[in-house]
Length: 124
Image 1 (spheres, rainbow, N blue to C red):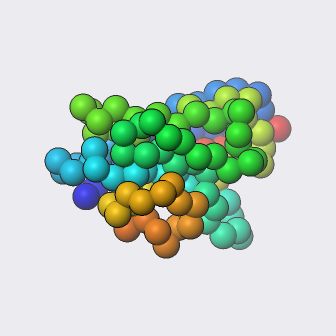
Image 2: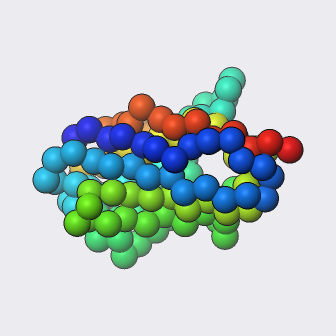
């Protein structure tokens, strides 16, 4: 599985962005998908996850109520709608695939496939 993120850019505090991740391969619809982020000098952290069907989602407390994860299995795409952005949301954002698709996971080592990342910068 290859994952390619897009949509990152510079945005002002309070603004919105929509990140997309397109997956190759026909097994995308079987995988749970997640979004992670990594700020300079910090560890990669969990942002959100969505089940293979799209029926279940899971968010980090820091983004709950502001970010929404969604997927379109017909288009092999997972999205992250980010609203009310804050400077602390500045990071490289990565999408990731969990092929075992058990419960939704927040640990990076539960995800086997990763994209190259897209930079989100929120100016104060």
